[in-house]
Image 1: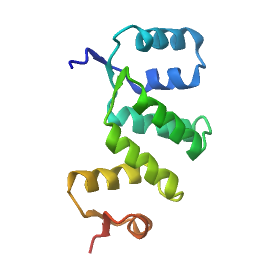
Image 2 (image 1 turned 135 degrees about the horizontal axis):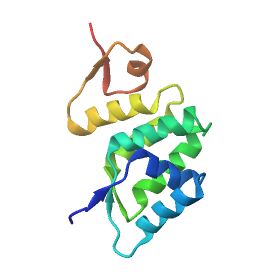
Image 3 (image 1 turned 90 degrees about the vertical axis):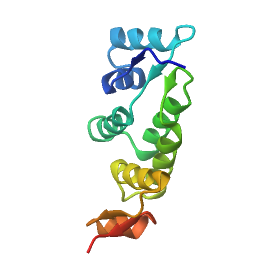
Amino acid sequence: MIVPASLDTNMLLRLTLRDIPEQYETVKSLVTAPGARYYVADMAVVEMVHALMHHYGFSRAQVSEVVRAIISDSALETNAVLLESAVACFVAHVSLSFVDCYLAEQARECGNTPLLTFDKKLTSQHVAAQLAR
């Protein structure tokens, strides 16, 4: 299926937060239109997670609910398998950032392991990560 347009981070934030009513109504009408399909890049989700946690005070549990709602929305085309595994890692490993979880899960999923890093915390908590020497 051809997806006609993409949604950026701000569209995802407005849909989630409903903090700017006019913008929320705009994005809501787009994604609820019959046959609507929009592409959501992984980076838009990663940026949204960062904003929700660092600017809006969302917890890991709240962030995981939001990400799972986005990947399950039939109007949104996402990299659902990778984002779901990243969010599961993020919930399971409370000292890892979403970016760390995403990178480790992407390496694992793509068969590009180990993920070489200098991050000892990451290597101690994710099987795909290995300390570079």
